[in-house]
Amino acid sequence: MKTEFLKSSSHIPASKDGAFLSTAEISPVVGDVLATTPFIDIHTHLFAPSLGKLGLWGIDELLTYHYLEAELFRSSDIAPEKYWSLSKREQADAIWRALFVENSPVSEATRGVIAVLKAFHLPTGNSALAEARSFFREQSIETHLRRVLQMAGISLVVMTNDPLDPEEAPLWLNGVANHDQFRAVMRLDRILCHWPKHWQGLGAQGYQVDEQASGRSVAEVRRFLMDWYKRMQPVYMACSLPYTFQYPEDTVGTRLLKDAVLPACRELRIPLSLMIGVRRQVNPALRLAGDAVGRADLQALENLCREFPDNRFLVSVLSRENQHELCVYARKFHNLMPFGCWWFMNNPSIVEEITRERIEMLGTSFIPQHSDARVLEQLIYKWINTRRTLAPILANSYRLLSEDGRGVTRNDIQRDVTRLFRSNAEAWTPLSASSSDAPNQTS
Ligand code: RAT
Ligand code: ZN
Image 1 (cartoon, rainbow, N blue to C red):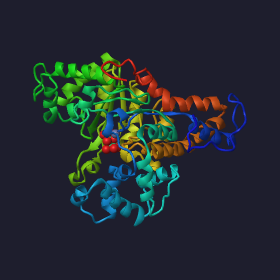
Image 2: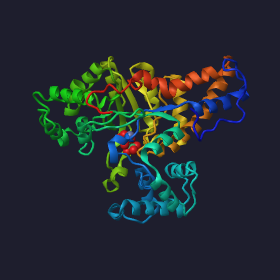
Image 3: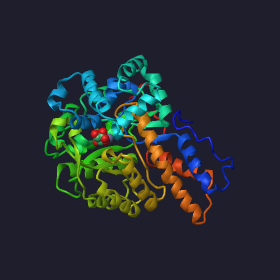
Image 4: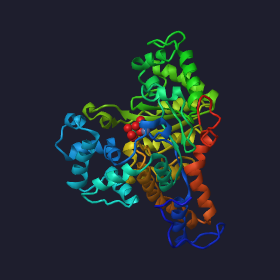
């Protein structure tokens, strides 16, 4: 599959796939392989069309992405309370004016919107908004979705699905149609991090739990996980953890992790994804944009990987200061898979630094990136950026290898890119298993 954007260079060497490449040939071949290999997006906040309104797409959603909302308040005098009282369209107008008209959209998140407009051959100047709105209004989601995935060079999108979300859970309980390009993930933040606020949600679904998670609660959480596994067929379970996360620790969340979640993951043979390092709501007035980052103590991860060798952990850390330690731990524990450059790390300068470090320390045994897209069309710019940033890093690795005496072929590069952006994820999760036999689902 060729992506529409990352057109292969016009100077792709004609050498055979198994022939050694000259130094000058390496870079265009790397670019071509990156452009033509469909990637798997291992973590997003997108939803399959059968989950209806939960799936966000179009220009007003792109403009009101919480990464841009955070930037709005730096370049406009609008007060957060005033902003939240506006309609979605008015919010998008305010962001467009402040970040795209009154200022140049040079930040990563603003530039992304421009890249999306360009991808659809829409105008990108000050008065672009009206035409963009009418373009998106004309799209029908099913065909638009396929087109966007094709343009982004993505074959499979992994969602984030919360079995205690009041909007989402009823949809699953009624049966959700499979989609060949989407896979589910069972997200457990409400259980592992916010039990006192959410244990009653399990109670409402018929599970006998209490606030202290005493008595039968742990077994009931386990039953809940198994029931939801049947319903969702998640490819992994997941939790975003604060920078203060510790293991072991005497808390309800830790007990549920140890005695319910980890045993369920073992039984189901799926990994647990831990995203570590959020400092929640440092500025609550900004809502979703109000979270920050803190440096985590990764000894918690060390303890988990050692104590649970039969569990596998997919891990992303939010603090730049934790990235090197994560690589060191991945060298020590083969049940640890670093993935992605998450949220505040997803900027080219930092992605470049982290990815070089990972290649130098882990070879190709990691998953370089996920998009974290919340709005469908973000896939386009986020994956353009990943391919653009990765190309010189990979080319440089092969140039050094070649200089050091090992010839590099196109086949080698293809095998490595496939491993980084597909096979590592496929080997760690049941991503490629057909979801058509999922029970309790309609197709
Ligand atoms: O990157 C984001 O959009 C964050 O708000 C979080 O959702 C984070 O990615 C998460 O999965 O918790
Ligand atoms: Zn996320």
